[in-house]
Image 1 (cartoon, rainbow over the protein chains, first blue to last red):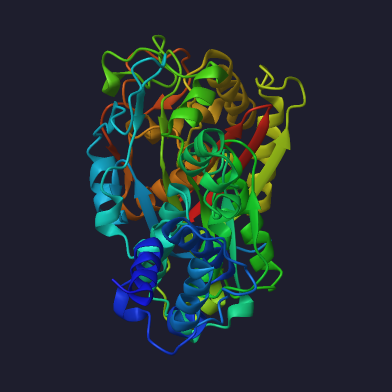
Image 2 (cartoon, rainbow over the protein chains, first blue to last red):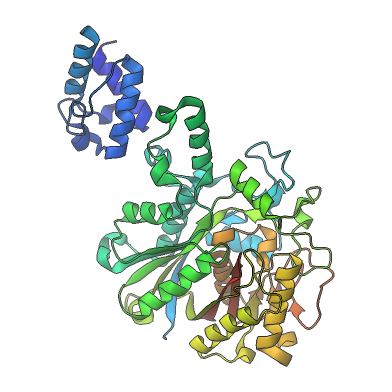
Length: 78
Length: 409
């Protein structure tokens, strides 16, 4: 499974939403109206899922799924 | 002060969800107090309660939101929706700045808090849900209802132990009388059927520990009383000015016409035994409503089923009503579904309105041998009676007294 799909699955399961709601190319804010507390929870869940430490400035409510996946990819290859 | 119209009722209770189901069970005098099944309560002295098992069936709340809120907020959201539907209000057509929320609560959202605190000690900081901070506190339901409907007007949560929701209704009326708002969602919610909340209620020492026969345990004003039983739920009503209600063609269900409150100031838990301060709160409510004590047709009793609380309540009634008291039916319907603590007064007010609508005084269950004479207790079965004016009494620990006068539409 690629990182982008895994990010989508992690967020959908965590936030109790349908995976289709996380649209490609759209920010979390515009696609699912994520709030700041959901972002805190999402960053913690992604860190646990991928075993990396994410910077809250890198993964924000304005990030797209692709940007989040790219940040995780960079951390994993370092 | 003028009367305020009640135009919608939302009930979430062990006796039913929605006013029809609720009233059908109340008028039939059926008990909904059972052994607690939500968790293993075997080691608690009192392990019975009025529990709601089918809230999800009536819920319109998404899974996404549910994971962020405690059960007491969930109950408040369902009760609010039922109340708005009953009132025929489409929130999109209302001015959000002129809508308010006035709710009462006693203990907060412990079901959520308990599990997160356990995770804090087991898993550390990262094990705790980030929603914990916004889920547990008593004003959380006010916030959630406000967010859900986009309500932006003056709002308040009243924390005054078991008297909270009746006080919230009293304050809501005052605010509406000042024409500061068009409409208020008023009432209360409580979810004490959780391990830690049940422990605290047990520590308080006023719960009945007679677990053998749950339906017969809560017996206010009976010589065999042994304390009260907790219940969970929410009661929320739509309140609005009479003129506005008439203009929009609303079905007015009843009026709130008087409110009074006082403090005993004698003990951190118990009330004053003489009932004088409760009598003062009742008299204030009657004067506010411009109602003579003799014109009251039904008294909804607080009925904690604890000696000093029941006895002082009777003393207060004797002070206020004098020789008229034996002619006024009185009952404590919460004996059927448990004491909803901070939400108890709102449920009692809703029952009072439904009693007036149906011309039926609901019964006190298990009242077989009254401790005091001179009161027309309605026990075991509902009694037909035309009711135009009701007095609702609600009291909290430390001697908090609240009284509301409700009138027929």
